[in-house]
Image (cartoon, rainbow, N blue to C red):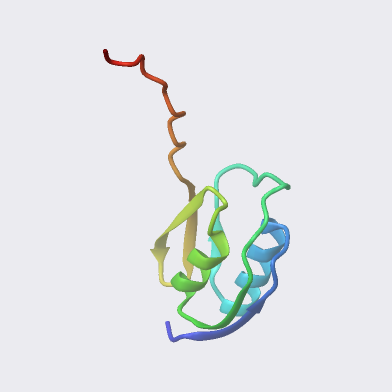
Length: 90
C-alpha cells in the first residue's frame, strides 16, 4: 500500500480508528472493547498505514499486527510490571 495523506485530530481512540479506517481504506479489528477514556494522538501528514496506526496508538497501551493486505488487528501491549521496592542491601 502506498503512502497516504491523513488528517486525524486527537480524539477518542475509538472514533480516531473509524476515521483512520475511512481515510486509509484499512480494516481495524480487535477483540473486546476499547476503553472510552483512551485518546488518540494527532496524525497529520503522509504515512504508510502502519506508520499512521502506530502514531495514532502511541501511549494507548495497544499495538497491532497486519493480518492481510487491508486488515490490521489491534493487540493490547503486555502490562508493565509494577515497580518493586527491594530491601536495602547493607
